[in-house]
Length: 388
Image 1 (cartoon, rainbow, N blue to C red):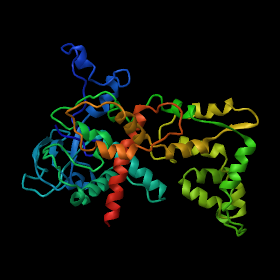
Image 2 (image 1 turned 90 degrees about the vertical axis):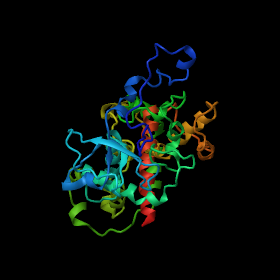
Image 3 (image 1 turned 30 degrees about the vertical axis):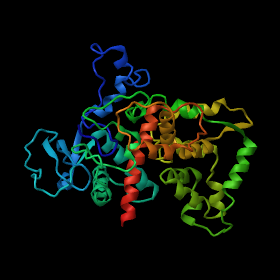
Image 4 (image 1 turned 120 degrees about the vertical axis):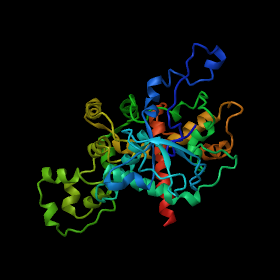
């Protein structure tokens, strides 16, 4: 079995076994289907591909479907069989002796790579990038990290790429078949379709008095400049037009613009509605892009005249929440099955031992998995950046 280099799950999908020939004890060793119904596994089953340098020739993404995997990113060839998504010939693929590096990955994970790279590009006010360029960039990240990926001390071959973090749980289950140990459902939960996502976030909003919110706004703005110099192209604009411009900017640019001079300081409000709109827009936090807008707007109707919902605090708590660490801490505090991979257990315990939450109620499993996968992507990019 081969594993995705981004999420660490089996590239050909995770499936529930037929239960008609299993006894009660065997069924008890599977995932809890109430927590993780079969539909939540479909994102792993859609398709997978392998990417290498030749995947991006002619400005198009060529993704051979099949198995091209290595013990590590060092580039050792293990095995290969493939066909293109359109079942074309294999003429574009390198032969066994080629030094090219292939990386197995779910098509779903390519979507998360694209989402994350575009989010980071927007946050840095850089030129927007296409999906193909985003995926090609991440391929170059993987390729540059080959010297850093250590050999598997257990001698596992033909499995996938070894990361020191062990995919935050998934590496435990790299065997001839995926083992569904109860309590690890978050590893496989759909990171795209999170039905209770908006409800979970809204349940974590807290009411504060309007005066208190105004005082917090003053604290937030205490470093604003007292410079009255004018930026005629902006501070003379009507508020409606200025707001349209602001809607296209990342949060860092908005905060800088807000502090440019007194006119813009007064025109650009950083009240709770601002933080709500930023959160709903999907541009504020890298793992939030699909909130339902209407319920968020309607939530404000539940506040009284002298209170408001603290959207700014919610955004801060979401950014600071250790979703992955808490999931690991909760699972590792319970008994674990014998015989499964244990080499990462101590590092996961060390990582999660001090994790605490500010949020109410357990987060959706799909949200935990989304944060887990995006974190793997982000850490790979950070490692590559540090190599420069």
